[in-house]
Image (cartoon, rainbow, N blue to C red; front, side):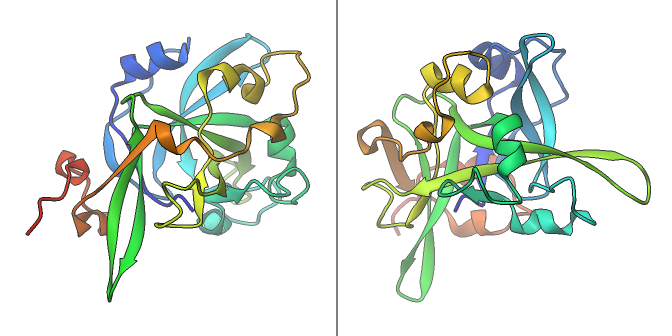
Length: 226
């Protein structure tokens, strides 16, 4: 699964990397982004034919949900069968998005404790995680809430010792297909595969990342051996 990540690239950097066109939102850096937080997501508007960088709530809430609580269970969506699952099928075919991440965290059990690791691209570029987004209207207030989920697939050999799942990372060449910008009729399901191990790196970090209340740059620094 992917339950915590960092996105600290400044808004202008995200605008440049993802070629978004809308006015920039007030996006603050996160070194310990967690479910239910409001985080940047890249979407494609079929009417304007432009990408936008928007702030959405992490934890997908289907349009038929009675309240927001289901979002806690839908922070991730397994790639296998995603096109037919009730919680995700409409979003998969109509509302795919990219979730920018500079790195994500994973935990490995070492004896009686779990050691957190940071995972990033060797290139140092911001990752584009495959995501889905949804509109949900609060029945009590009438307020619209936009939410998202991150798609996971089987772990590659680099990450398999940490966890059996990893988020789907999309190459830039595949962004137009995933966002529905092109008419090439490529099957988006074909993009949901593990990212190559040789293009990624991992390193141990402090267990302070376990506390969602801590959101500081030092969290991503390599752990100094005792």
